[in-house]
Amino acid sequence: MVLLRIYRTVGKIILLILAVLIILAACAGMQNKKSATSYFEEGAVLVKQGKYDLAIKRYKKGLRIEPRSAVGYNYLGIAYRYKYDQLRSLDWKRREIEAFKKAIKLDPNFYLPYINLGTTYYVMENLKESAIYLKKGLEIFPEHPSRELIEQMIQEGEREVR
Image (cartoon, rainbow, N blue to C red; front, side, top):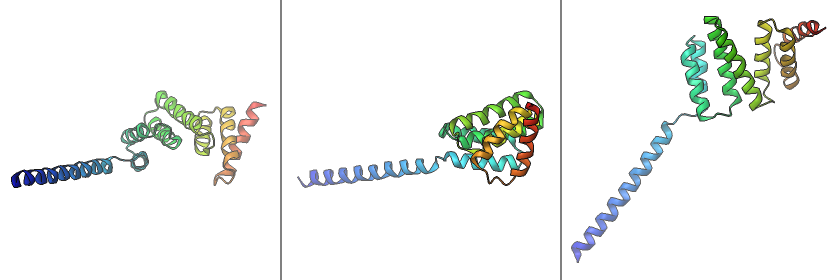
């Protein structure tokens, strides 16, 4: 009888220890998972270092975690822009445009992809298209620090329309 109580008590202690270990393992696993934001931040550092391929991979990992992140797609578009500048392959320019458009679709009130897409079209000398996006970006964020330059770009696009 005493032996049976000891077995039951030991069994309960073992189950309690196992439960605690499982909870600790689960918590450790959750701490190891990165947030989308941390991947986006890593990507931004990599872009500054000129490591565009690695940055693109980080942005894509972040977007797998948070697929509706307009910020993530905007960052991805910037990385594609630098990759295009590096290789001059139109495929990278196409990806850049798609990423900015996806960001706009996900958050139509986020001004940065409008400015970035407008700048992309401006550099491509598609001034009419550029003006549309730049104008929308300034409508959303009229205090943009480069407002005067953006307004000049818009004026060039609007002259092209006439």
